[in-house]
Amino acid sequence: MAERDRPALILAPMDGITDAAMRAFQGAQGAFTGAVSEFVRVSNQPLPRKVFARDVPELATGCRTETGLHVQVQILGGDPDCMAASALNAVSAGADSLDINFGCPAPTVNRNDGGASILRCPNRVFEITRAVRQAVPPEIPVSVKVRLGWDTIDAIHANAEMAERAGAAWITIHARTKTQGYSPPVYWEPVAQVRRSASIPIVANGDIWTLDDLERCESMTGCRHFMIGRPALADPRFPHLAAQHLGLAKRSPIPSTDWVALFEGLLAFSDRFYGPGNPHSLNRLKQWLALASRFGRFEGFDNLKRIPDRRGFLDALKASQAPSDFISDPSAASRRPVASVG
Image (tube, rainbow, N blue to C red; front, top):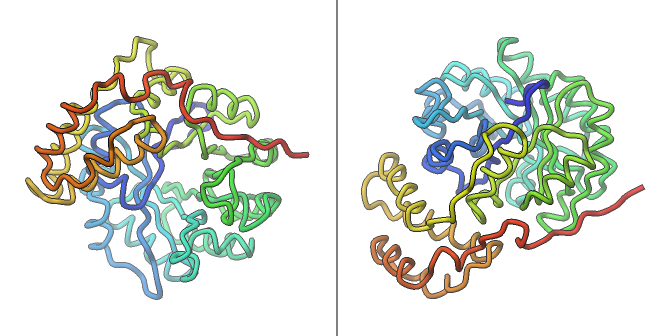
């Protein structure tokens, strides 16, 4: 997914948002080169194959969505043996690449020995990564996703070194600490330092909302591989612009966002996965529009979020807002500060 000689634009895993329907939908849009699944939680015993088959349905179709987007399976946990056995079961279920989540900042995850809590002990990053790497066939890439550290940005150096020594094929770095959550700023200089010292690809992640942000990240880090999540939902045109900038897509005019058409497209995929009329589908639309409202200048979400049926929701959206009321110029999106260090 992160090949050294080719740029990449990867859809970030967002628990409860980038599910199989959203991954299929994003695949249909044609901008991303790959996606990472929502994390599959490994606790105190190995997960059976059926859990991976249920949580990552793309395993039944060659690790690709029906729209052709490659999907990597992400696992999360703190027990090396359970993680290794679960990874092997994921491969048996069809996974052709694995990612280990060392970056989730959610308190419920961290309290249960998962996600970013592992970053407090670089040796554990090594042990878990090595256990997974040794458990699965050598042709199966194993990558890791990390933050800069638990509460200090300098921790990235030891953690990245340990991940690479353990056999990680690439490292995705979210340029914040765990204690920051999603608060600004992002710190690109430590990412640049890791990229220069590592012999494997480094994927940059965090607050890449606009082309200006992407160009700044590219310039400051030297990275050619990028992961975005929330920005793809706040401005659905941005992945296309990013793909064009990276040479992954031909340059062509990007039409104005037709949000009703986009939502109807997502509903079509949701119906296939969850059944027609499932309330889960409308909840996904509201999550998406909430992101657009918060980060994409959409006004009027408060008048829509309590509408209980999806047809009424779409009709009200169509009646109340024109596409131009959403963000139309990506460069005008909410800007996030970037820290200068050293």
